[in-house]
Amino acid sequence: MENWQETANLLSDIVAIPAALIMRYRDPEIEVFVSSKSEGNPYKPGDKEKLMGSGLYCETVIKSQKKLLVPNALEDPEWKDNPDIKLNMISYLGFPILLPNKEPFGTICILDSKRNEYSKTVENLIAKLRNMIEFELEMIYINKTLGEENNSLSDYLAELQALRGIVPICSNCKSIRTKEEKWQPIEQYLIKNPVADFSHSLCPECMQKLYPEFDDES
Image (tube, rainbow, N blue to C red; front, side, top):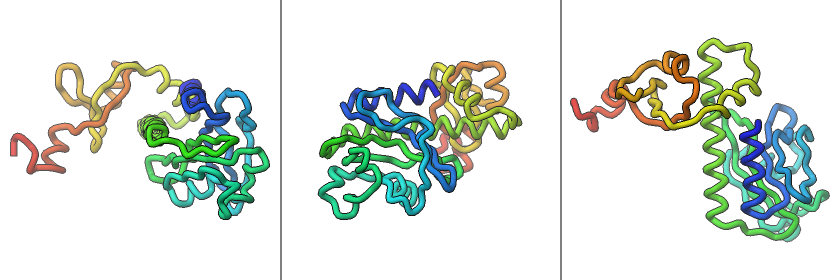
């Protein structure tokens, strides 16, 4: 949670807007999961709304699973009556956050009390942060499949926040490449190396199986 809170705070500071949020969707409600600690932010963690049919910006993002940019809702007939107008949040940029099974986790979004077109740099930044969150959620899923069913989401996030360094992980079978250039199952690696972060790669076996035309040994 601390890592995600820092992400929201960083977004609000860099873009100079009052609200950066990570929203969590649990049917039928959407909840403010993390809210930036910025001046003028009207959203508080734990705030909830019924999502479907609400007219919220995030409803469209979750339904479409695509980016949404609304520079000025007051000038847009489609958005001029949305509920966030009551909070004076008239511009919005948000991206969907998906779970490993492609079901919606929620959104990462920023809102402003004035017209804001948001630059491509800002869009790229939010997309990058969204990708990082999705990767952490994927690692949470992997941990659960290793039999740690009793750990809560907060426990897993706390573990992930303690990780440091970058380690190649096979995108297909989730094997880990060690410093000795050997590949081993992720559960064996995590037992011996509890402090690690991951970057996607392909182990030789998966490379040969998935892309034999690019495999050196084929």
